[in-house]
Length: 238
Image (cartoon, rainbow, N blue to C red; front, side, top):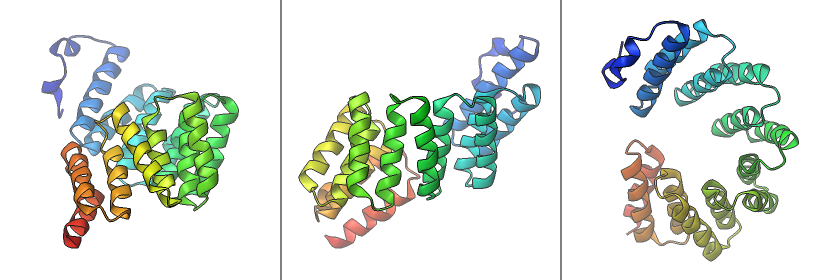
């Protein structure tokens, strides 16, 4: 099995279905860290055979299908997760995130609303809905939801970053950069946060600073194609 040499040796001595599932789960996470989602999926699917009612495993299967670009299979896994855990708010948030990822923002809002109904204090649901609304061009309403997210969790870096993009789209560039900077201050290890700041800088024509932020995003995730494309565009403007 691939990545077995990266899993603690003692796990191979444990016997029984639970031990096997822990081993497969660890192998799956190692594969994800290596960016090998096909291999990760194979491990999580083995777990599904051993424990079809493992709701968290459904979430990991959905993630792998999302990364592999298979929307229909990802939806099947999300639906199975919801069927097993219909009262779990983040099951609906995850499905909403998947819809956003595949540019199906109206459908995403339905699931963020379900998550909010289950757990009104779930900041991720408000952040997700804000992002979907912003993609739909409903910037003022989107801004309200980013603020609702931050009211519930002032440490939500994604809410600050999403708010920054939203403010950019509203033409409030100085506020946009402040929000992006706050997001990065909270967590500087996420490429999306640097990417969003770069977008704000690019919009104002500050191409040199935008390139610096794209470089930070690419340092964290070298395969970020959009960051590379945007950086190339900024270089051409100099």
